[in-house]
Image 1 (tube, rainbow, N blue to C red):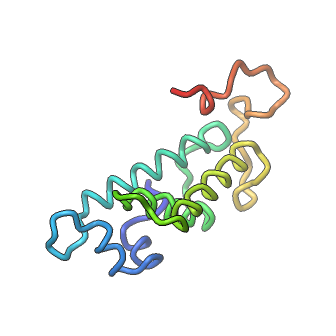
Image 2 (cartoon, one colour):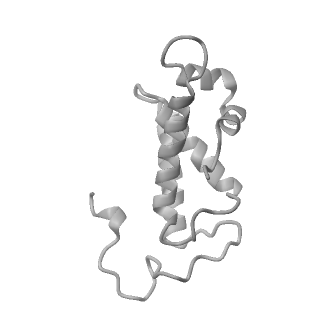
Length: 134
């Protein structure tokens, strides 16, 4: 289940801007494939950070994850070099996800998964796969 959909994104950034960013064929209509690909990319990034800490998929994504998803999607939709403000929001979103993965930030009081060792737990861990450069 995606953290946001095209309607959520349009409500957040405005349908005119969404159309400008996602209209790749020049027909003044946002291309759903472009939006869907950006949503999938953002979901993959979010899930990558949350997988070690929470049972996925989350039944109802908290508002924070929706904001993070929108910032990641907005960055992905800029197929030419995004403006500095968009880059900063994307970088802030990644920092927030890292804080969640590290256990410094808990999502809406949700209980982290106890099925697997969490990064930062006292259990021995070989390496953090997010930092291995794959």
